[in-house]
Amino acid sequence: MMDILLKLIIVSLCVVVVKPSVIIQRYDDDCVLDPELVEEIASYQNVTKYIVNEIKAGLGHTMYQEYTEFIDKFGARPSGTDVLERSIDHMINLTKSKGLADVTTEELEVPHWVRIHESASMIQPHLKNIAILGFGPSVSTPPEGITAQAIVINSFEELDKINAKDIQGKIVVFDAHFISYGDTVVYRTQGASKAAKKGAVATLVRSITPFSIYSPHTGAQYYEDNVTKIPTAAITLEDADLMRRLQDEGEKIVLHINMSSTFDTKKSRNTIVDLKGTVHPEKLVIVSGHIDSWDVGQGAMDDGGGMMISWFVPVVLNLLKLKPKRTVRAILWTAEEAGLVGAQAYLNKHMDDLHNINLIMESDEGTFKPLGLDFAGSKKARCIVQEVLKQFAPINKMENSGYPGSDIVIFVRKGVPGASLLNQNEKYYWFHHSEGDTMNVQNINDVIDCSAFWAAFSYVIANLSVDIPRT
Ligand SMILES: *[C@@H]1O[C@H](CO)[C@@H](O)[C@H](O)[C@H]1NC(C)=O
Ligand SMILES: *[C@@H]1O[C@H](CO)[C@@H](O)[C@H](O)[C@H]1NC(C)=O
Ligand SMILES: *[C@@H]1O[C@H](CO)[C@@H](O)[C@H](O)[C@H]1NC(C)=O
Ligand SMILES: *[C@@H]1O[C@H](CO)[C@@H](O)[C@H](O)[C@H]1NC(C)=O
Ligand SMILES: *[C@@H]1O[C@H](CO)[C@@H](O)[C@H](O)[C@H]1NC(C)=O
Ligand SMILES: [Zn+2]
Image 1 (cartoon, protein in one colour):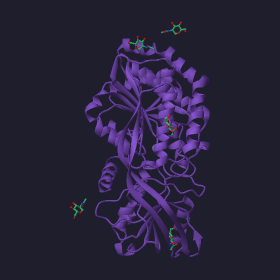
Image 2: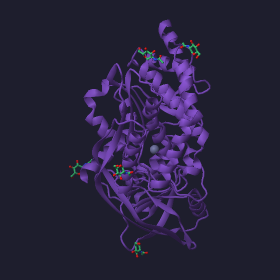
Image 3: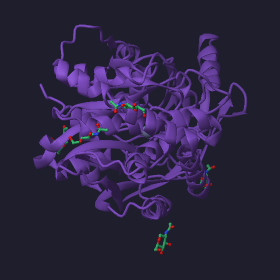
Image 4: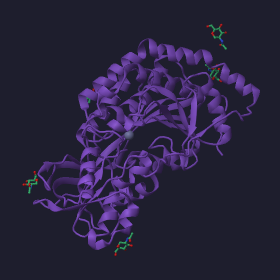
């Protein structure tokens, strides 16, 4: 358990706390490619149209049906649970039933945090239920719960300025408004330890979302070494606003929190589906998404949709009898939500083989209307990708946030070119990590369009005469 805790902390420091709000670069027309390569890329227009049309005409509808059945049959698939393992078995079986036998798994140890009971209420200035959702792996409260005065704080800067004696023994309520996920999620991931250092007994955090119909949003958090572990949970925007107003109105706020959970480790698996390359089977174009989810909602959006369209790439190319030069590998990561645990295990295991990853892709920010790619790689590489994207117009937007995907960012940091799906996901965080993440968020035509683009683009990259150049 200690080992996993350490791993989580290390991962959190380098990974989870990232995506910056701005630094979006849009590429322009300063690419000069070899005319023969431009011509070669243009010659793929026929086959990309074919793939897109076949997926839209029928194959994509079947995939969407299989996706819906998967989500409805298994629902939420948290790290370390039996239901996650059964859902992995289901995808293995489904792969084989679609005629692709090359499916393997790689076992690893994953965190298993189980929410048992959570409740909270405001006792002063009046009695009111407070909806909470603990952050994994929060510790439990004592059985009698915690009853304490609350102090509402906007930011870590404000926390730094307040005397420890004014925080000692209190419940810190972090009320940071959503700017971007990366900017705001730090209150969820780091808030407990920062408040504990000043003597807080628990933290409640304004949910990391710009919108709420009284919905708390969960997610991972990380305790620092040698700092008292205190219970930590999300509250709704409505209750955060209420407590902020009460404090400004000079009211004393007293809360009662009761939380219990268990935490251990279990075995899980990354699932690998290969369409073996005809000329360079050792070279890989990886398409991926994570099969695990949080324990609320159905994990339909995060990341059922991304997992499904990625799984479908080798499956549909095989159905269409298109055999690219390089291997097209779909990876269904496990335990992403617990801190990119599956991806980290894959990276460690395949460290000597990273040079063979031509491009690594992930869809984990929604499968709404597709727009293009968020790409990280050398200038030459993005010129090639941009040239390929031209034939998918209007799905040809290209950005460089520096943070493509979630799992794949650790590969990108090792110099592997990476791309994630840009899509019209303005409402992604409305549903993210909440009971609202269900099939109702998904739109069949958008998911099919994502799938068609994802498969056709991957095919071109996997069959090009040139590798995607590194820096
Ligand atoms: C594309 O398909 C059309 C009609 O199917 C054919 O006439 C044309 O030669 C093809 N082009 C290439 C580059 O394969
Ligand atoms: C997968 O297939 C195996 C072998 O046919 C079967 O025993 C198992 O129940 C299936 N699992 C799921 C989750 O469908
Ligand atoms: C806290 O929750 C636990 C588990 O449901 C329950 O046994 C206990 O009585 C609760 N404590 C209080 C003070 O409500
Ligand atoms: C935590 O405490 C232990 C034992 O005192 C010490 O060895 C370790 O370096 C500390 N870790 C950090 C991050 O301060
Ligand atoms: C894929 O590459 C092979 C080998 O270079 C080539 O013969 C084939 O035409 C390519 N496929 C397409 C659709 O261009
Ligand atoms: Zn996700």
